[in-house]
Image 1 (cartoon, rainbow, N blue to C red):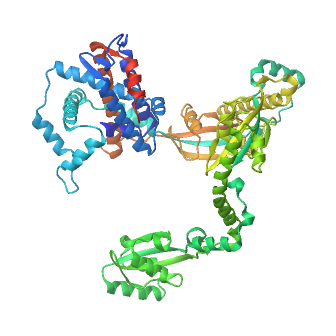
Image 2 (tube, one colour):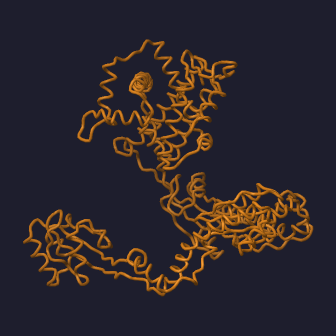
Image 3 (cartoon, one colour):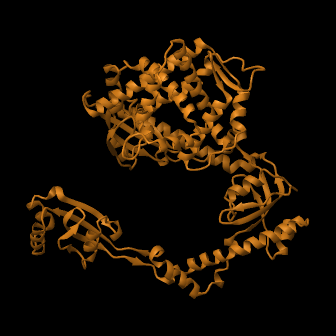
Amino acid sequence: MLGGIRAAQSTWIGKALTTLVFGVILIAFVIWGIGDPFRGGSANAVAQVGDVTITTAAYRQAYQADLRQFQQRARRAVTNEEAHRLGLDVRVLSRMMSNAALDDRAQSMGLAISDRQIAKGILADPNFAAPGGGFDKARFDELLRENGLSETGFIREQRGDYLRRELVEALIGGIEAPTAAVDALHRYEDETRSLDLVGLPAAAAGPVPPPDEAALRAYYDAHRQAFAAPQYRKLVVLAVTPATQAKPGDVSDADAQAVYDRDKAARFSTPETRHVNQVVFPTEEAAAAFVRRVRAGEPFADAVKADGLGDKLVDLGTVTRDAIFDRAVADAAFGLPGVGVTDPVHGTFGTVVAEVDAVAPGTVKPFAEVAPALKDEIATQRAKSSVASLHDRIEDARSSGKTLADAAAAVGLQVRTVDAVDAAGQGRDGKPVEGLVDARDLLKAAFASDVGVDNDTLSTPGGGYEWFEVAGVDQARPLSFDEAKAKVAAVWTEEETSRRLDAKAAELVRDIDAGTTTVEAAAASLGLQVQHVGDAKRAGATGLPQIVAAKAFDVAVGRAGSAPTGPNARTLFKVLDSVTPPLDPDSDAGKQLAQRYGTALQDATINDYLGTLGAKLGTKVNQAAVQQATSGANY
């Protein structure tokens, strides 16, 4: 079933269905009527579903296991706060409550499974198989340890899983996708339309006369909240990094030459590439006769065709010597003085003849070209030790009560004063303030601080440090009309251009639909080109904006329409034709579509069943216990 769910997400409608299913599952237990949490109850239980209790220990263990798996997939540490934002705690609790509801149902029905059946299932599980096949006890024990499970606990979980699986299979086993529904989905997804398109730029709206004073003031009065000066801060900044302390002029040519010689092959050289084809021959004699004919003047491709070896011809592409898997073939192909064919080669897969039909020589950047960058690199590396020393001396000076400017002067450095910068890194002129080191973290810290605060030292990428003081704060304020006038004019003009462009597009759509003009004529009148797209589907087409594809399926064949494709751009289109290939239910595509839709129906059935079952059993959640179980653990 999980494979079907993954397959269902290959199209947008499948994604929508599976998102709906899992979204409802996640909130199902909330709408079942979870009322009072365990008021005054035990903190050893996070939830109760019917007669089944979900203990805090079991929930914490499941949450930690899911968090470990998530971290392994992400290949990084995931904080507990991030896991909460992603809803991991809710998903784990929802899953456990769903399982509890099914467990309660299995108990009420008297369902059971024997130890022999459990053992048989474990022995046959491919997750525990040895490389050569058969059950591997060592691997079994290792996987249990990785997931924090004992053998007894795992068998208990397996027993519950098997019983729940039996319930679910009995519920959905006979569900198949109706033929009519599959056909409708096929027609929806595979309908293909051909379109003529014209991109309308802002110029298509015609010239927009500048607004008069009254229009500007009216716009300003109606949108005052949009015209405000952000909060600006005056900062005193000192950055000490290997880059700021590097002295490339102190690096000698000899030192740079030594690094160049050491790294020339790996960093400054591009290896020779050749376009290589190869043919595998049944015998060495056949290969030798083939080589003689080609060297006598018969084209390589004609000789391959004449010998009936087309299925043995392999285009290895334009490759370096190291990119060819077969070393013997690589040595022979790159041993040729230029284009040509090799002698027969005893390769890994038989007797081979290789052809080289193009050669791109390798290149080496000269020392003079890379010397300045090498000197910067060497100087930066050497500066790392001085950065650590400067950090300690500046910290000592600050600890003695000196201002940042005085601490910098004490070690022979100068601070930088930024008169005004907003939280986005822009100055009063609306342009980015240049030269800020690690600007994002600096501004984040600076706008969380205040005047007179002794701020923590910031660490910068590459092993540097940065200090700052907030020297002043200009609070955000509304701009007066005179201050905002230029911006008001720009916004008014942009909106008026957009309005006129919409009107122009609507006018052209009306004219095309009325037959008074054509797409070609409309494009020519504006000096524009017509583009044709013949494979537009609801999911889109190459080079076609998704919004245009969506609009094109809202318009009848033979009619025109338009869609916004930018702040001041529209796309005019006409639907020329619509084709839907017939569905072959016995084809691979037809079977996959039926399976995908059937899986979605099964999931919806399971969801409905769980909702009904939860409402019947009654549920309770101890939110305090849930928070404690997921916030106090060490991850």
